[in-house]
Amino acid sequence: MVKLTVLSALAVTISSISAAAPTSQVASWPNGPFVTSGRWIRDASGTNVTYAGANWPGAADVMIPEGLQYQSIETIVSKIKSIGMNAIRLTYAIEMIDQIYTNGGKDIPISTALTKALGTTNGPKVLAQIIAKNPQFSASTTRLQVFDAVAAECAKQQIYVHLDNHISKGMWCCSTDDGNSWWGDTYFSTANWTRGLTYMANHGKSWQNLMSMALRNEPREPTNAAAKSTYNWQSWYTYIKQGTEAIHSVNSDVLIFLSGLGFDTTITPVAQGTALTPGSGKFSLSDFPGYANKLVLELHNYENSATSCNSLQSNLNNNGFSALGSNKFPVMLTEFGFQMDASTWKGVYASCLASYLPAQKAGWFIWVLSGSYYIRSGTQDYEEGWGLLSHDWSTWRSPSYVNGALVTMVKNTLA
Ligand SMILES: *[C@@H]1O[C@H](CO)[C@@H](O)[C@H](O)[C@H]1NC(C)=O
Ligand SMILES: *[C@@H]1O[C@H](CO)[C@@H](O)[C@H](O)[C@H]1NC(C)=O
Figure 1 (tube, rainbow, N blue to C red):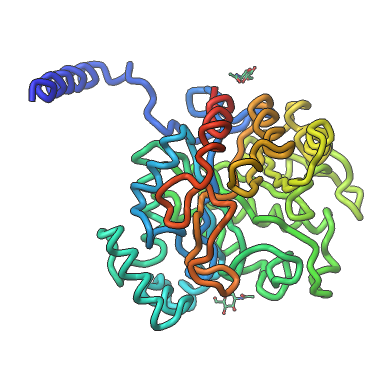
Figure 2: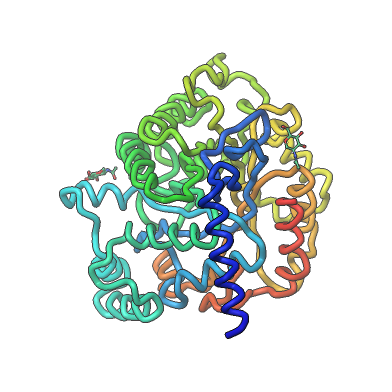
């Protein structure tokens, strides 16, 4: 009781100070919009910022963020916050927006989405579990309202949201023959994609903490013959410009992340300013009028069997991280990950990234937060051995990794 009185007295004092001197207030979080300057990302006060966070998938069959049948959004965000992370990479499927358009502009309730993805027995069962853990939801809550709630809780706990278009059709990603590999592939309509990017860029304006959006997860060579013919850097550039325009035209605040070829393992021609083959044209910031200071490069790396940290670092550098050294672009590793057990994190791959990324002051998102998925590749309640969290999202799957390396990696990245 005594403590409470002191605290409220303090609160009164603080609020009267800020009311008296509004101009001297410290800029309030998240202090955006962010811009780039060479290899750095800056907030509105000019302070460097980057991300150290985790992937939170929401692009699979149900098309809502995972884990909510096991824990509340608040509990999950608190876990992320507890290890010092400052961002999530939140993924969504273009199909979610396609269905909104098909449905006369109205989003689908989660009850419908769950039954469609999990069946008439398990759909309602999982819905009841989600509502039990997250009583602010009901059967008529829509998918976007779930995304909104995740963003809002992240804002409350000062976690930035980076929104990632992971796939077109809502399902587990990614392979060369999944119909989502490249523009023109079976499910990957360029028009639906730009429409979806615009929709989410506009919708996300209501999220206080939406700082950046990505164009597309892991572009890759399709097995689909028709789509395969345009799998090159020259066509990539055409699509990328359509995508950045789709976002920037409705939301000029967010940073836009560009992903490269080969499952986004390389973005070399952009980082090094070499020809976008088979043509001879080059990437030019002048092709992004008015938002040349909004572009960030992102890479993925899964060289999990690396035996030499030197060669892993040199690969990362050649694949695009050289844009940091040449002060051209911020570069982030938006996916890397490994088996969450007692020892894998001590191996070359994980320990090399744990030192390399903070040393570069490069942002990153580990794959993946999920201890399990509503459904993955047809299996319901799928166990995720690479998940930071346990199956029921209640504890760390590998406490030795989190306490022995991850917390330090976060701290050193954000130092
Ligand atoms: C912030 O960015 C500037 C470049 O503008 C750089 O010189 C400086 O080292 C950065 N600070 C930190 C703490 O990384
Ligand atoms: C694009 O969206 C429409 C709904 O507006 C849908 O009917 C169509 O199947 C989508 N295209 C692809 C390739 O998924």
